[in-house]
Amino acid sequence: MKTEWKLFIILLIACIFGVIFVLPYTLTLQGELLQNLPVPLYVFLAAQVIQSIILFSVAIIIGLHLAKKVGLGLPILEGWIEGREVKSYLKSILGISIGLGILAGILIIGLDYLFSFAGVTINVAQTGQLNPPAWQGFLSSFYGGINEEILLRLFLMTLLVWIFFKIKKTEDGKPTNADMWLAIILAAVIFGIGHLPTLLAITTPSPLLIVRTIVINCVAGIIFGWLYWKKGLESAMISHFSADIVLHVILPLIVVI
Image 1 (spheres, rainbow, N blue to C red):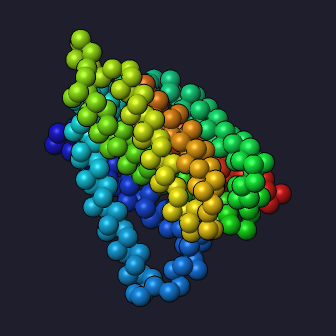
Image 2 (cartoon, rainbow, N blue to C red):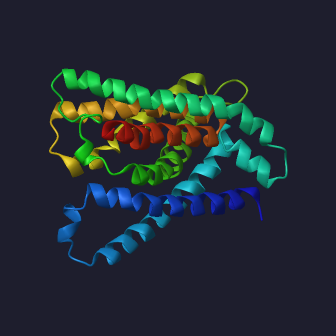
């Protein structure tokens, strides 16, 4: 079996676990909305899982195919599948991946406070009643680290880089730095927009609240995109997971205390 197909199977299985792990968190946030479903809850959840499997299957296939063309990828998983030594590289990226993830979480909290001074009332440190318990936040962090990175970095950012690459490339046939940064920023903005459904599930947002949600998540998305570019998708996954641990596990525990 080719490396690309082995990668596909591994990533798809990881995505399925991510979808299942995020369900308790989602049910807590959207519990009231789910009470009026036209079908039984288990049917709705099964349909969501099946839909996610199809979505992520397509995203993984396209992402892996295009990543090879533009010099992006998953160096650790690829090396492991091909029997190469990867422990040293994993050790080399752990520090910066976790560190930047923690920084992303802190930046989100800090920016959230700044927006609160401008009159935005939803604050991650002041809405404990809206935050699912820490154990649900821990499980949901796997969805952020795995599923969101596959969808937004492996698929979307790679697709954008490939499109820009087709328009302009360097003399040695690689994407330009400007194109990489443009793809990183665009994917990060879409990453921020992707968090609006969660916002809508807990409040009726004002325009400023929508801007706040996009901006604070965009900052994190830029960090994860840079790591994907420079260190590989695994680094972005570790970083995103670390940021979510700060936001969905550590912060709720601090608020409770």
